[in-house]
Length: 374
Figure (cartoon, helix red, strand yellow):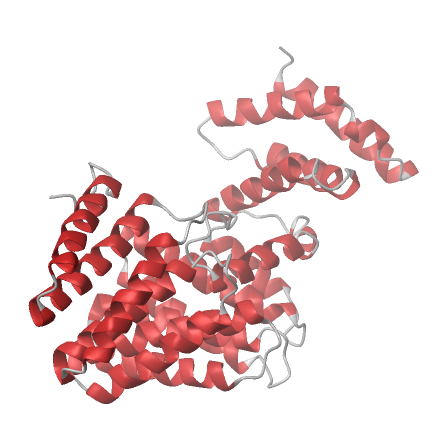
């Protein structure tokens, strides 16, 4: 095993050679990757931040990412981001690495947009709030990507809040996404995505802190998002789904049937806006069924109950590879409640039989270690 000094010398020679010739072939050799991994392992074994070595590795992985074919480049991109994350956490990201952050933003911003539209997506790259701050600060105020960089910071803060429970992260997330929306003019390509992000963030803070003003703002922002013209069905479905969720939350808090009526109508629009293979079609159907059942319980219209059962059945028939066991169990549970409610109202034994069977399926689908598996 080569020592640190030798690894630094050899890898720096490769970088110098590339700088002089612009021929990336020497950087792409397997031996270079092996030496980089060996140096990285030595960093993991040490306690202190080795700024010189990490800067060199950051530049090396960046240039490899830039010159490898698509599909073979992701390992180096992830390594570059991990190094930047570590340096940001240590507060020592060198100025020489900051310009590189503008290059790899594109795939991360694409993934970020997908997360905003689909918060259950597990493919969002792990980037710390500190790194997103560097990216946002390094992006000119009039650059179109600054909007998503600020949204990225907001998402990172939300994720950290979920993991660590720091309320200050929620407050900062709301503020930076508001900044993003102010930076997005009416014709900005990411304005709708930013509004969905802000509505989601406000709803999360309401769920944590209970402030009705946050919920009101989440709904108003959601309405604005829905009114924003977009040819992208995924964006429209995300905006509608987020608004329906916020409306149901306010109905549960205030009991205002007007919110429930709007939630039903928006829920129907959400389902219509989603293609058959949309990863959240089952959730949209199940949530619509829940809203319809709640309205039946308040107003007594049997048509709502029949529709709740119908869309609930559709939700349980949707099969999507991204749907987890808890999601399937939740949809089956919603259907079970609807058919049991219809049995109690109309007395059809077939509904009672279905409620029992669906309940059993819900229990089987629920992971044994899940807190709701009781």
